[in-house]
Image (cartoon, rainbow, N blue to C red; front, side, top):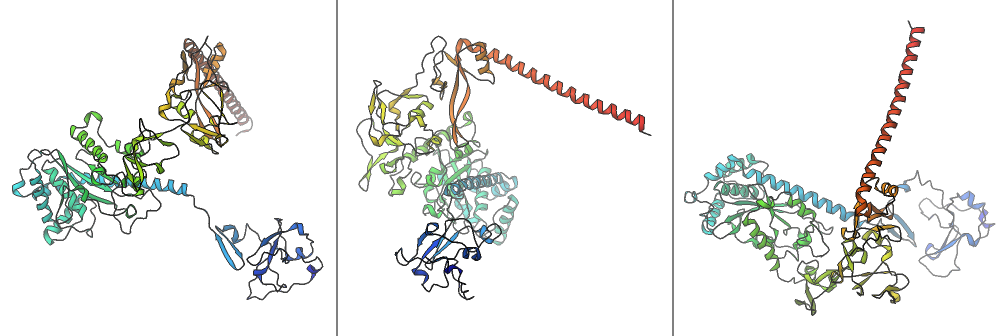
Length: 635
């Protein structure tokens, strides 16, 4: 290391063409790649003048090895960095840092927040899906345009004018579709329809100049023709929203809507799909309507919706895809009908959205109920996937490697699979069961049977309270309680871990009885009421602002009811909902709480009256002073 006397020597200025590092020494002939750079750990920036007049010891520096050599004795003097104003310089706006070591540069890019990006992608998917749904609904309204219906009806061949829903057969329906396709050629390059009048304009151009019309216009006109013949007809729309996955990129110039027709043939009691957009219609071949392609092509069906004449809708996606469980479900929002996890509870967002446009339960026809049963059976008849990706999340089949951390395989009898995939057993999805902690079962109104051995052990991670696992559930000190109440030692590996139990190891929670009006409490003086079954026998939960004060005033024993926990201000806090008291004391406490509330309200009214009286008093005083001054000194 250079001494302090050498630092007073005047340094040679580098040429303008050369670009030395701020940490390089121009007087040292050693190449930069063979040096070890010394930096001061101090955050104080100094100029060259300040550094020449300051002494530094070896303890004021730390070493950074460069690309060449590992000899710690090769240390050189380094200039102090030039003073930089970070607030006013361009460096304050940098989004990445570039580090140059030994002539090589390494750029540190900002990390992607994938969780945020996935959340944004999900919102975009929902928004685009609703917009496509509304666009299809508007086109279904166009079908009922009177002028469009009259023109469509005039194009029906004479031999088919007498068609009705009761006399309709597959042969006559095929003839109707073929004759319609011969009249109107279609092309995706034709203008998109924007209103019923634009469709009428395209019809006139086609009939006069034989120009093709857009496939959407052709389909809408055919649906209008069939409804004009009083046939039970639905407009089918395939919606292709922005994909949920960040890895799927939409193809260029991709049109996210496709339409075709479904007509109910009463004699066969089936819905017959017909696509009249090509020259030869695709008749009663639902699986031929889906284009071939992978998940990333975005052309496969994900949402296929049927719109009928009374403006109700139905999800009929399962009819048009042979790989609903293995492929289609990965493109859709989760549904409680198709969810691969037994943890799913309640309807998904998509189910709730579709429910808004379905008729009431008493208005659902027998035909619709039969169709729903057929769609469910078609999913059960789906073949086993032939790829590893197809098994992941499949609603019917599962590989043991794809089980989630809270899932296990449970069999009533012998462990048995339904097949093999590349030497690995394939199990039915119904054998997959969810395991939960003791606290989570209590929230559902169940208690774990005594003497049950945990199915799994879950390591308690930091922040696990957000997921419903509380700190008091983990095993600390390496012991658990057996059925006799004795302490049983566990392995060292299971310390600070949460035991998980299955649904076959629980029973309905049996709440304790109250004795002499005393409410059983926990160590915190409260009572956990995660489920109504957890209320003690002979007790009652009452809610209100002043029930706690009323019970304390009357001298009745009570316990604050804790119904859950929430994550607030970076910590878990209990959610309180009323108190638990004896049933015979509940009415008296309610009346007392009402009286206390009435007294509080009356006190607040009295305070407001006094405050208003003071305001009027000041106002009148100021008015009288003003009047007196006006009389005495005014004109």
